[in-house]
Image 1 (spheres, rainbow, N blue to C red):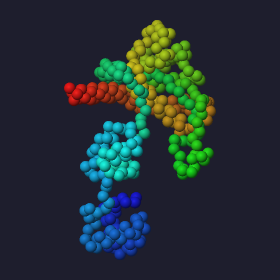
Image 2 (cartoon, one colour; image 1 turned 135 degrees about the vertical axis):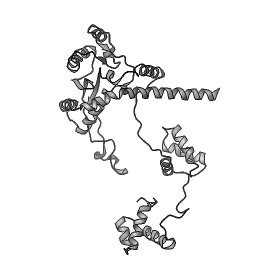
Image 3 (cartoon, one colour; image 1 turned 60 degrees about the vertical axis):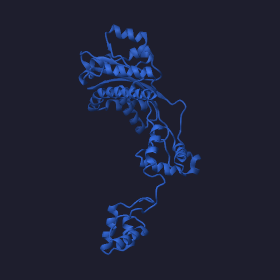
Image 4 (cartoon, rainbow, N blue to C red; image 1 turned 135 degrees about the horizontal axis):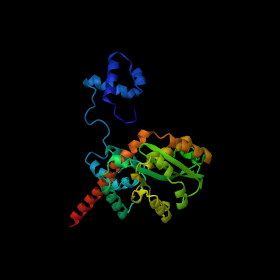
Length: 346
């Protein structure tokens, strides 16, 4: 038990039961990993009152009571990116009380809030948000069977990782200059460019090369063999993002000559493509396996690409309608907030 934390009723009941059986107080404290004074106080209270419940008003009073927590919660939700020090400064001025950072930490937890690392998402301006909303609304009626006819394709970059696992190190304040506590970084690590495609029932071919990709390379490594193998002559729709190599005149004319239907894609929308989850899975495996050379990195990528299970692919493709609903829901919520603000002004 931490210092100052209350003893649970079940633990107090065990102390009283062992005391009634004739067990010494020191032995009870040692078996339950409590201090002797804590065990003595609980037994003394049981002798005097015959109960194990804590008396009302016992213990140290909190600086911020239940009436102060709603205001603190509203401020934390309004300013989600504020530091604990900034919240502490605001709370001292607002509540007119002497508050420490630890007190605010505890109060934030009492508000059922917690500090998390921010999730990284692509920046979207108002035009891109509207295009995403209109695209999601236009494709919302597509069934899962329709989405299974889409050939999802994308490229990603993999780098050779250096150093130990994790971003944190356990050390003292004086060990900041200890070489064992450093996180090595490389200015330009060796990397590979990877391109692949997938559908709900299988993985397509995987192409790996060094350097960047242009329109000529993109045409050379395109998905025609994968398309024939996965769809076996059935019609399909190609999905790729709006990269320069995808929207180049050479690429669009090449796709038009082969009568390949392309799915119109909104900009800055990697969260709508299920193949992005495949890249995330493979990169997590690379952090676990830690390949040391480019050759090992390529072998690991190919191995993990072939090990993606079919049920995982079906689950990712089936989640596309739910992703569209989330986009529409967020856009409507934004419209509601704007309308409420305008109604308050006028």
